[in-house]
Image 1: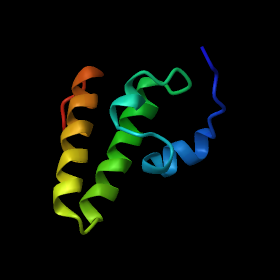
Image 2: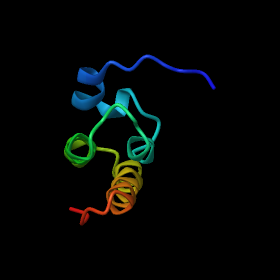
Image 3: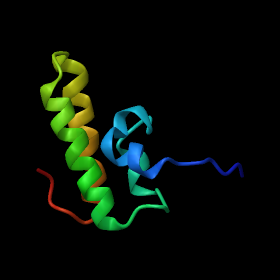
Image 4: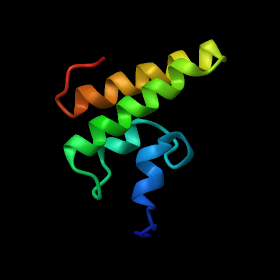
Length: 75
């Protein structure tokens, strides 16, 4: 198993540039549950501001699924 370095600040501020999918945040060991939820919320806001509707819609669905896996109500 390869361990990767994680820039926690960047990952929380711009998760879309750090993670391939919102679902990866669920298993991130370096984040608390609260940090995971806040990061997913930040990613949601970014997705809502983007102009590519189809792509953003899929990301929003993945964010909701990730939050559900964390036991948090989506939206």
